[in-house]
Structures are given as structure tokens and as C-alpha cells.
Length: 488
Image 1: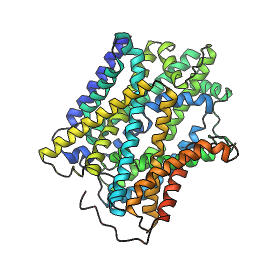
Image 2 (image 1 turned 180 degrees about the vertical axis):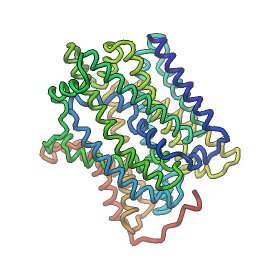
Image 3 (image 1 turned 60 degrees about the vertical axis):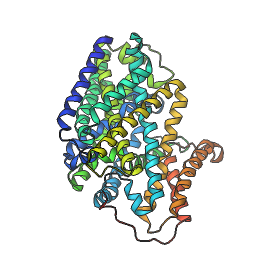
Image 4 (image 1 turned 90 degrees about the horizontal axis):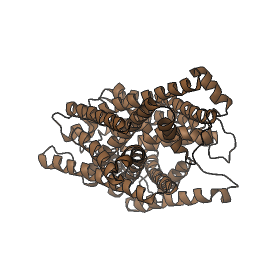
């Protein structure tokens, strides 16, 4: 079984290299960064499903159902309004200025300090986030494959990152747009096939399985206790702002949109993605409910770490076919989120930090390739650090902290888009550091300070509000912004 799974992994990887070969011909920097703005919007939209979900969703969301039912769907419903904001407000700005890196907007609106701060916060967030997502997948591969062969974890992580690096370092976003379609297909197929296998093992049809999940109490979406961190209004509004910052203000996700031919195409892509994510996430919720029903039916103990439930059942209880399908889906989800992250990090570091990338000379291309490998190396080192920590609670906390760094971006962009005032540019980095720290303090003490109220995802809104308010306090009447469209 181990050899079979590894062989499928290699075959799948080779198919990605085949796509890379076809899409990276006549490679250039502009091709790497935005695919010459020739990506078909429907392909981008479909492929972004896999990039939006990632290996974390594939493993964690089904396990989440045991504690919280279908309450996560209120977050997903909030996504739709978030995508509408991106479609009507952010995308027109990005296309108006013909941006490659979305953080260039901060340069023309505020100045260099704000610009570098925004880009740096994205790079920090994405390095930690991408490393965490890859760690979950690499760790599963280590437990079920490479431990049997005596291959050390660091070599497994290095191999995985190297494969991603090699198939993306020439074609960049143009390659990723097309590989994402393959990866989304495999991930969704795995989801449907495993649901079918569960229904067969339980001797039910899909309608009967839905009934069993409902009768077990897992389908509850609306939590009305305002103190609970899954309170439906918290979840809904959190979904709106999570989408705005982690899609609309995230270079990884926006880079794919900026590769579309026109603004209208990018807008169709965004709204289609928002609507498609509703049934896809609902399927993951049903999978989670099905896993718990199956475990109860056959007397299987629920692991303390609910993230382990899906891998354990798929590999040890559903049979060989399910194990293979699970690994294909998991690998597809991992590739889909990691390849885009490395490309986006390279783009932001080149354009925002180094101020390079506009030239098509050989020196610029070589620099871009070196930065690409550097970002991969940093992510491998982070994955190894996570393994050495060997404490899932601590690692999850690091991932949570990375999420706090999107708050300053939310505040910065809101201030830039909805006011005509000008902040004191040199003060922005300090406020951007203090804002998430204050937010984290508020979240950690909220039950004491606010009569038992527990913050969930909505702490992001508080974070952005602190940043926005602070910028108002240090601002002056607006000045004419410089136009960056000629630069990018």
C-alpha cells in the first residue's frame, strides 16, 4: 500500500510538471507575475476553489463538525458579501492602476513606509500560513509513508517543497492557473468518492446518510448564544471580513485574478468563486458529519485531535481505495495552496521589497528565480521548526497569530479607500505592530472584561478598526496621491 500511494504521488506530480512544461514556454517576468493577463476567467474561478480551501480545510473542517456542527457555514455565507466587496471596490482599483503587486496601491496612496509595511505583513503572514498548511500535509505523508522507509521528516519536507518549486519557478502564475484546475478536480473528486464509500459501508443511500447526520445533531448552523465564539452573527460578519482581507488584500489570491484578461472577467471570476464555495463547503460539512456517524456506528474512538479523524478513518477503516483517494485529495489540496503562496511571496518580495521585476533582462529573471528558491527554503525551514516544536496547540497559535497580521492591512486599505485624509507615513509601521498586539490582548482577556464574551474570527474586525482609528488620529487633510500605473 505504501509503495502504491507513493507511486500515485509521483505520477500526479509528473502530470503537474507536464502542465508546467506546456505553460512556461517563452517564460518572462510578466508571464510569471500575471500570466500576460491572458487567463480565462472561468478556469481561474474553478482553480481557485482548491487554492481557497487548502489542505487545512481538507483535514480540519470535517473534524470541526464534531464540536461545532455546521456553524462554519455562517462564515461561508458571509464570504458571498465579502466577494461582492472585492468585486465592486478592490478589483476596480487594482485594474485602474494596472498593478502587479496589490500593495503598490499603498505606495501611491500613503508613501514608502506604509507600502513596505503592508507588503512585509503579507510576507510574514503568508510564510507562516503556507508553512502551517504544508506542515499538516507533510506530517500526514511522513506518518503513513516515509516513516515506514526510515526517511527523516526534514528530507520529506525538502522534497515536497522542491517539487513545487521546480514546476512553478519558470511559468509562475500562468502555470498555477492551469495546475489549480487539475488539483481542484482531484480534491473534489476525492471528497465525493469518500462520501460514496461511507454510504456503502453504512448500507445507506445519500439521502439516508443526510438523515442520520441530521438526527445526530450535527447539522445545526445557527448558534444563538451571543457569548459563544460560533454565534451566527459573529460567524457571518467574520466571513465577510475574512474574505476581504485573506482574498482581496492577499497577493496570493489576487495575483490569479489580475491574470484575467479584463476587469469584467476578474469580477465574474470573483462572484462565481464566492457562489461555488457554498456547496463545496457544505459537502465538507456533510463529510464531517458522515465521519462522526461512521465512528459512532462502528464503535471507533474519536481522537483527541479532531484533525486526525479523517486520516485515521480513511487509511485504517475505509479500505485501500479510500486510502488512495484520500491521499490524492490531500496532496492536490496541498499543492494547490502551496504553489500559489511561493509565487505570490516571490512576486511581493521582488516588486515591493527589492523594487525589481519590471525589466525582462537576464539579470532580472535570474534574480526572480533566486528569490523563488529562497522563499521555498524559508518555508522548508519553518516546516521543520513546526515539527521540532511538536505541539499542535503551539503551532495552531502561531497560525492564529499570523491571521492577526491581516488586521493592519484591513485598516490601511479602509482608510485609503474611504477617507481623503493623509496619514503620517513614518508612524504607520509602529501602529501596524501595536494594532495586532492590542487585539490579541483584548481577545485573550475578553471573557473577563466583557462578561464571558469570547472572540472568534471577528477579532479581525477589531484589529482593523484599531488600525483605522489610529490612522484617523494621526492624519491630516489629504494631499494629491502619485499615480503608480506608469510604474507597474
